Amino acid sequence: MSQDRRPIIIKRKKVVKGHHGGSWKIALADFMTALMALFLVMWILSTASDEQLKGVAEYFRTPLTSAIAGGDKTTASTSAIPGGGPDPVHTEGERMRVDLRTQTRPSDEQRSFVNLQRRLESLIEGDPQLRDLKAQMRFDMTPEGLRIQLVDTEQRPMFEIGSDQVAPYMRDLLRAMAPLLNEMPNSLSISGHTDNIPYAGGEQGYSNWELSSDRANASRRELIAGGLDADKLLRVAGMGERIPLVDTTPGAPINRRIAVVVLDKRAAQRIRSQGLPGGEMGAAPSPAASQLGGELPRSPIEQFSQGLKDAVTGD
Image: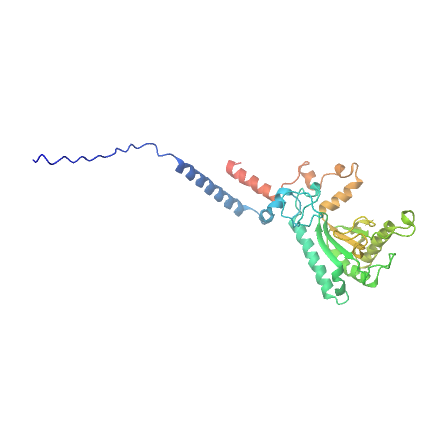
């Protein structure tokens, strides 16, 4: 062997196998838990009634802002923080009382209000004599229910100036509305409003307070003459010039108006409870609450959650 040939040395690193970690086990456990929850949800949905399924569907249709802040879903605001702004239906803010936003309006009642508005609009549009009054009708959803406002214009006032004498076209409109309002199971509220132009005698004599009240009662009489059940009327009030419409001057003709509100069940209950000791705080519990020993009925999503919990625990 030649002395010039050197030995070839091969170095190999010895790999020491250590603990490989268990992160994959956590991922697998999360996946299996989610899969089990999915199967449980599918099983419960397959056994739920149609009413419960509708309640769950309505819950998931509720916008996140309404779910966080409460209240009905008619507000156009995208802010989840209530407060500020000139009007609850404007996007600048939601100056709505918190106690009126504690829960959403039932979906069936909301749909009935929307359907009533469409039927009234179709009625006005289909009658050539009433079609010109369409621009003087305003519909909006309020915390109390569906509000139908009939407003004045300079060219077409609803009443004789300074009196409660109903104009012929206003009489026809109110009497045409009456049958549709009568088909609703809801109670009604009528309020009269005026501009801020005072009478010569001031507040001591006949004033805008009396005028607005008289016009509200004149509208009530026309609705009853059109077929409205008098027992459906829960409140008739005159507001004078104290509540002008947003973005209008107090003397604008549009502030001379009649507002008919189709009350939802909660608003009607609040009005009726004013005759009880302590007002709203002394209101008697609802029949549903009485049957449960004072406990309020649970919402569909709460019933769904309880069913899921019972299925997991085996109760």
